[in-house]
Amino acid sequence: MSAPDKTQGSPTIPATPFTEAERAAVYRAIYERRDMRHFAGGQVSDEVLLRLLRAAHHAPSVGFMQPWRFIRVRNQALRQQIHALVEEERVRTAQALGEREEDFMKLKVQGVLDAAEVLVVAMPPGREAHIFGRRTLPEMDIASSACAIQNLWLAARAEGLGMGWVSIFDPVALAQLLKMPEGAHPLGVLCLGPVDAYYAAPMLQQEKWACRAPLEDMLMDDVWDEHLTPGQTKPVP
Image 1 (cartoon, rainbow, N blue to C red):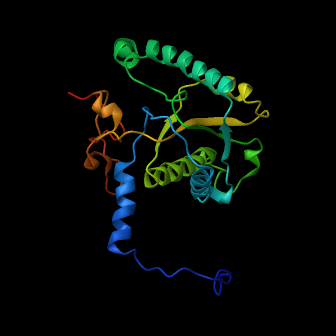
Image 2 (cartoon, helix red, strand yellow):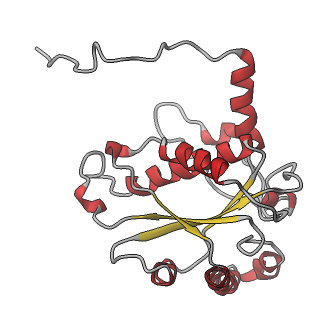
Image 3 (cartoon, rainbow, N blue to C red):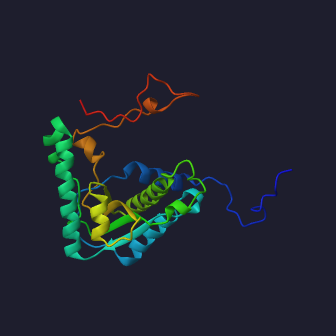
């Protein structure tokens, strides 16, 4: 006999669908969210920033481990140092791309000096103690933190703000710069703030770096389909 479900009798939320307007707003945020690199300066009020961080903190996490930590970078000298780290890796990445080096160097890959707010998302030490959901897939701490970033991204779009996720940096150097404890791991530098407009399409698609793959190329039935190559990034013709 199975054990009784201890959630029975606990407060619940009715499983009713959103209204048409509410549902449309959710999908609008999803489809209009952009990885922004161009910012208009300005400010983000503490009230709005707190709403965004609360949205991020309500993300799902494997084993309810909640592995996200947020560092708000307000010191301009520190921002300059983060900017320099990104620029160093930008050059290395361009060189590693070979024939696409010149095209890559034309792309704007960060807004650290332009955005109203800079947040560094990091995972704390001691994550190996969380076994639930991670025994065979230890990378679930990264997946959970990514869910928090996505929550923040969608909430930012709902607030009329832009956000960009910068991942071009040496994580060891950034951890040292921000005096993180041993075992902590920075996952992203988030540039957040007002923008003049959102890109009509993802910036890398507009810049003809890559295009969105058709959904049908990502779908399979029952077993892996060798004729499909999901996940490949193809340059725009």
